[in-house]
Image (tube, rainbow, N blue to C red; front, side, top):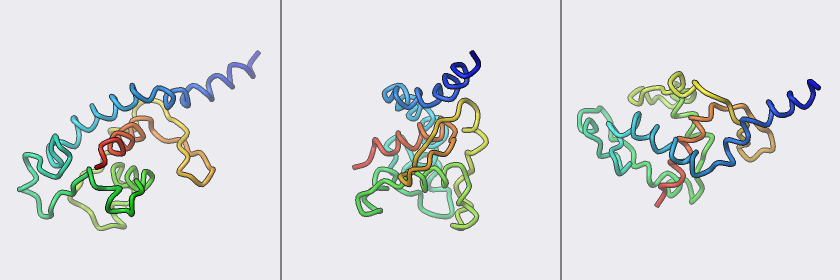
Length: 134
């Protein structure tokens, strides 16, 4: 009896990814809550405090364009949560890892065939950014 419950519990987070429209709505709300002050409603780096920062705020609608037409989801999630910030020298952008950890994990596969448990909010925000690429 325990095996079916374990299987259901293991698959439950994956089911969240199957609800793409709801996932995109979550990502858009997270963007509005955490990103618009710098990146703006348009995500083009024109937020209300962007002029007060030490460095230009990137246009988030051209991430794929700047990466040869490919959206680097894992790298974007790493920047958002703060993991790659020290290595990249970007201390202007706040780390959102702690804020986005609450809630379930989903299995995220970055394309190498290995699924990594990742906070669903972080995946939702990255997927929203993917959806607004020009």
